[in-house]
Image 1 (cartoon, rainbow, N blue to C red):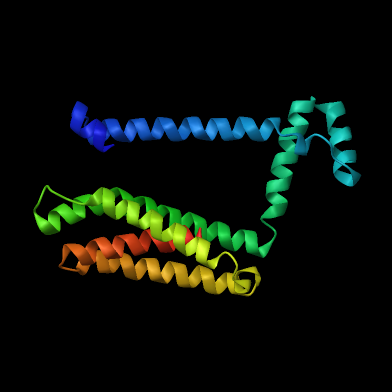
Image 2 (spheres, rainbow, N blue to C red):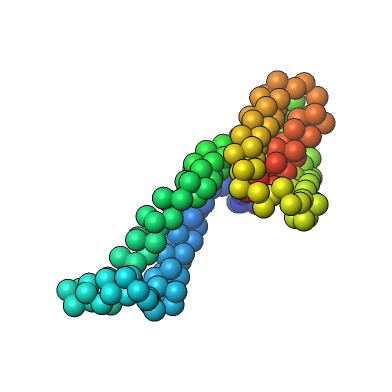
Length: 189
């Protein structure tokens, strides 16, 4: 985005359009990959019998589509899947908003064009990767009872950091809040 803004003086609307098209293409590729996955072709037990019965009424491609949606629906019956999905929708929405508007917020607060935004963004990714590596062998993460604490803690910390980004006065504190926000988001996702 920064390259397009500087080199080609692209407006934000153009950048939004490019991003939207790229996301739509990635969604179509993901959907095509799901349709071609061999996991859904060889079914056993009741699912296989249902697929065989359906294939007499519809073609094999439609049977795979039914199987995909049946698997998705059965996954959401699991409490953990439903809770992490709600977390994901809320956190990713907040994350997209923060990563979209943190630079204009910083410019409004500092009234400067010079910034260290790339460094702050990189620090967020680095802190997230280090936190993930450090926590990868923690046994508490395998505990299903930890799930709700992780969800509530990550959402609360990210909320506090967003409020802090809006209220701090110093540039270093702002960058620190942003980097820690990124790290918490990366670690919990």
